[in-house]
Length: 336
Image (cartoon, rainbow, N blue to C red; front, side):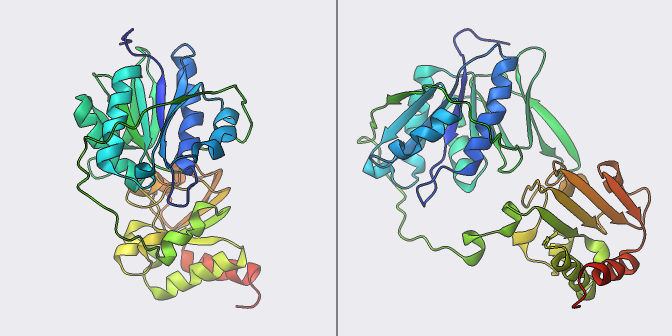
């Protein structure tokens, strides 16, 4: 499918409201490096929008990640995200440099920006992906849940650039440095002609936005509908406390009103990859496993020996959580 007019991979580098690079960018760079090798060693480049002078703070990060070029737009009007400004500038850049693949993090900002860009470029977009690869024809093969999470679909784009948004925490970052002498290309922010229709008046953080322990948890203890009630959830939380783990839940448990949405793992929740993931009373439907299947080690406890969760578990325990959890709590948390 290779079109000689299009070449290379372009990644959108999102700047957070605290003036940091969003972690999903680094995840995308490492994955893009893998894709680039399958495409014959094409360039991996980035594009960033920021206030004047901020890009200098990120130069070492860009170089250490081995990026070939960074196209940057600096203007005080770009200090906060604007769909109108960002999309117009990104479309112009893509028309100029013609990347064959454009990757954007599926953050709130990325989910707003990507479809507008795809529409303007008259190209396809695979949204909220959990996997990326290059097929035998050199096409971007983007995988995402479909049919309400019942299936995983791999989607191909027939037009250029091939676009995809990718969920944060899906891909692991490589801590090793891959230093190169990155070329920084200053681009004119030609936005005077654009009428800005939306203005950010105020932004307030909730406690959940400030920190979510699941993002960095090394041990996660998750519960499903099989916990049944508040007593079951309390038992699981006691176990999590005893092993210094972080409590999480399936969508089913959240919908039962037994856990907040902020700790939901899965297709409509968070994606995590802790060192240890302990799934208690979780059947293993794809809607949930898509958010935790990349954990380093998975332990599953379920009374159904045929539960799908055992197919991805490294260690499986067939039994009643209401018999197993009290013994674990007693073993690991003597104060309870």
